[in-house]
Amino acid sequence: MKNSKHHTRIIGTSFFVLWLFFSLGFSSWPDKPSEGMGKKVERLHIQWKNNILTISGKNLPGEKMSILYLEAFCKTNSTNRAWEETTIPHKTQLLSAETNDKHIELRTIVQPDIEVLHDIRAGKDDVEFNLTLHNKGDKDADVDWFQPCIRVDRFTNRNQDDYISRCFIFSNTGLTTLDKTRRTVEGLYRGGQTYIPPGINLADVNPRPISADQPANGLIGCFSDDDKYIMATAWDRYQELFQGVFVCIHSDPRVGGLKAGEVKKLRGKIYFVKNEPEKLLQRYQRDFPVPK
Image 1 (cartoon, one colour):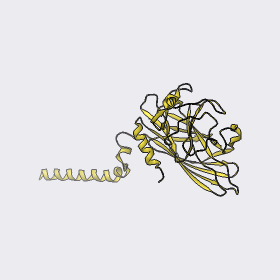
Image 2 (image 1 turned 60 degrees about the vertical axis):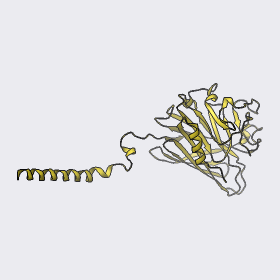
Image 3 (image 1 turned 120 degrees about the vertical axis):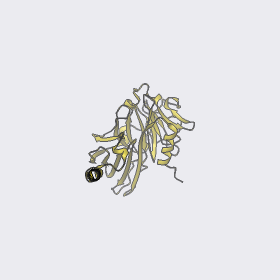
Image 4 (image 1 turned 90 degrees about the vertical axis):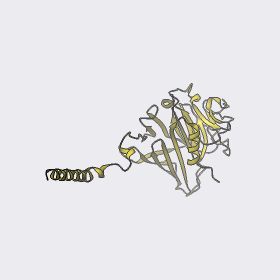
């Protein structure tokens, strides 16, 4: 009889513990154990202020990367014309930013009547850009391409004199570091190197030296100082890949002009991945499939 009462108390206590667990604890557990249990999954963070988009993360080599977002919007016939005659005045403002630094919305006015809405989202190992460009005027607009300028000094731990050996494009021979491309020095402005894809008019690109090597795809990137990671960027339509004069690399998106009332959309990505070029290339091909 005594053992029976003891057994009954044990059962009662067990039911009370289970009730307490379900009523107080279970509902607050995360749906995915990887997000709240065991090792925490780190992700990227984004902030924008005074035309600088900052990407940060505990696992990001250099911890932060700055992007001049945006440097310039450009007209056609830019290759042999003074830069100040090519660029179109523009101004960007912040519309919204989530408190967790994961999602930013911006609005750019490109004079006189072009509105660009930017939806920028940070993921675990990439940042995605979705842009809507709208010519709200009654005249066609000569806005051909524009420039996000990605500063890679912290990621590569290099300066202007030696960082090109850490940067790459994919040429017809595969991944090629920029110091191994056919570089030229002649241009309206000296310094840097421009890589022009097939189909782009050579009169409508950066007024700096143009390489004889054409990119095989839209990726341009660099290796981290410790050779463990790759940063790479691409857009679904691009005017040029560019290595600049501020320890920077560009994939410059192509607009191709906007007719009166016309709306166009652009999509881009910045990847931060392990140093596995073949996997990067496969991911790029999934994200930006070649139109059939």
